[in-house]
Amino acid sequence: MVSQVSRPQSVTSPGDVEQLARLRHTCAHVLAMAVQTLFPETKVTIGPCTETGFYYDFDRADPFTPEDLKQITKKMRRIIGQNLPIIRETVERDDIRTEIEQLNEPYKLEILDGIPADEPITRYYIGCPDPLPATAEPSLFDSPSTKTSDANTATCWWDLCAGPHLSRTGELHPKAFALESVAGAYWRGDETQPQLQRIYGTAWETPEQLKAYLTQKEEAKRRDHRKLGQTLNLFSIQEAAGGGLVFWHPKGARMRLLIEDYWRQAHLQGGYELLYTPHIANRDLWQTSGHLDFYQENMFEQMAVETQQYQLKPMNCPFHVLTYQHQLHSYRELPIRWAELGTVYRYERSGVLHGLMRVRGFTQDDAHIFCLPDQVTEEILGVLNLTEQILSDFGFTDYDVNLSTRPAKSVGSDDIWELATSALKKALDIKEWAYVIDEGGGAFYGPKIDIKIQDAIGRLWQCSTLQVDFNLPERFDLQYVAADGSRQRPIMIHRAIFGSLERFFGILVENYSGIFPLWLAPVQVRLLPVSDAQRDYANQVAQTLQQQGFRVEVDTSGERLGKQIRTAELEKIPVISVIGQREVDSQTLGVRTRQSGDLGALTVPDVIEKLQDAIAQKTLC
Image (cartoon, rainbow, N blue to C red; front, side):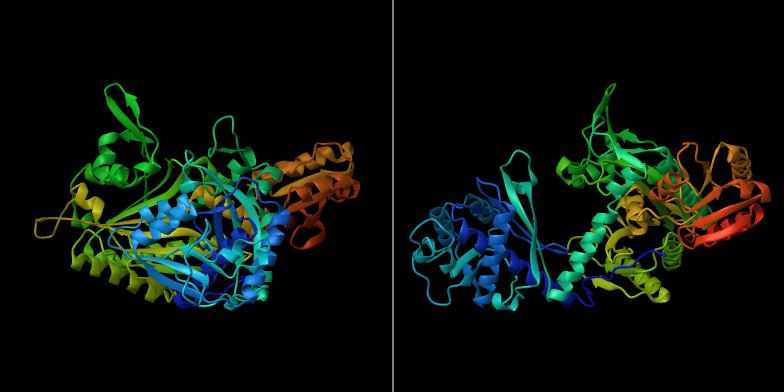
């Protein structure tokens, strides 16, 4: 079975999330205070919290070393131990601008200039419980004494920040945080801006949670899909072709085909029809869909084709809309369910590319449902049922579910928003799935359900999305003929279960640590002849198993048996069979599986039966 590692933090309510964010944001400020205490020449930028911790970006001529991180950690613990107050102050724009200019903090000045005129400007102090003296020299410390050679005397520091934070540094546990790494980062994520040094950290409420997180992190390194993808020869990213473009090797391609075939069959059985659509389209289509207005920064440059401009598609939705628009539909035809494994292309900066998880070309398992208003709940329930079936068959049974509702700025009437949101809630209630409501977190064109799957080591991955869309039907003037002969607007539902096939494949590799269920394994059985005298029998057995649909290899390396076994184990082959003269004489196979160990001598029909059972149950073997 898949090994399990406990999750380091169980978040049970929005309040827990907010408290953890407050804690991590405060830890980022303590980090920045420690850095400027120890290295006063350093300029500060931003320090947000993240899903597992925090980071802070610094502008410093000298690179931070591992020894520096140790020194910074020690200083942070001292600041925490001082239990300094954390004080929020609302300031006037002109006053704070003067202070920042005196401090020579150009990044903070840029942040200040980006705050809208009608928004309050706040800063947070660490320390400084009394009225503050005037700033005497360039530093975010408000007391000249903090600039002495004794770096441990600083007790007052501030940062331009909207918050929120804890009320005192002592609310942080000194043994429940860790500085993890240093990386380069461009200011504002722009390659034309200065390159900064980003210190990453993690912070938790207790040392036990920190320990669990670090254990999970080490396990994640061992399971890294980029490393396993190379070791198992599944895929590669060929930099000669460009970053973020995936090359599927034969074994990976075999697995991808299995996943795609399973997906297609599940959708056909679920009442969907399949589409194939182009990879490019005229610029005008993306103008009509709104992508050029709202999504252009994620799209590649257009290409000239004769006198027109064409665009690589970043999404499949407009193509399905055009297919619907090809002919006028009757209400009797609805719902229409169309699904496609459609490859899309999105511009991603090189710094954010990451194996299969963040790429520039990927395949979405898109589907769109066009339905009547009174069909929405049933269709959403059908999507949730299919999602549960597919995710479960791939080994994912624990989910975190969010329902995001109408934001302040949106399209569509109150009635249609109420209908769609109520339908999403009703479907989730019928499924008896626990979910968190993200008030105002929906897209401007409709409410949505997001499903995060939990993997074998407790990490959550965003995969499945179900989105009601009021925008595209309006933009493309989609219609159907109602029972009374009038023309009405259909409800459109977007949904993806894998999300991105590439990303889902990466999650699978890490979830199973490369030890795939038998039905997914690129090679299911490897036969290991002890010598050339057993090779004919091995080839005969391989042919028999292949005729039954199994993926079988015969080791032709000529290596010693021990080396053959070790190679098969390293390649994580689910079933191996050593074939010696005894097996040839008895017409049997000596079978060993990763899950059950040595099964002894079995006849070929017995092996076939056991393999078929494991495949039918989609289990390890």
